[in-house]
Image (cartoon, rainbow, N blue to C red):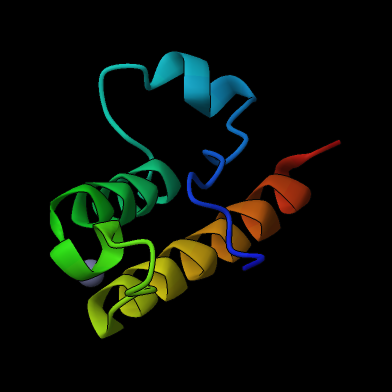
Length: 78
Ligand SMILES: [Zn+2]
């Protein structure tokens, strides 16, 4: 059992995280969707059940958003 029961939130720093405090960035939104699903889904909440297909999809979307945001930040960085 190497799966973490409580995934860490994504590191969010930089001007966007501060200026856009009232709205979620795509990365934060994707993470929020994933965590929100994990809290509501019986399969995902079960220790023995693992993650369901929806969780896999949401986590994949989060990783995709994270990759996009990281690429954007790299482009904007001086
Ligand atoms: Zn689920």
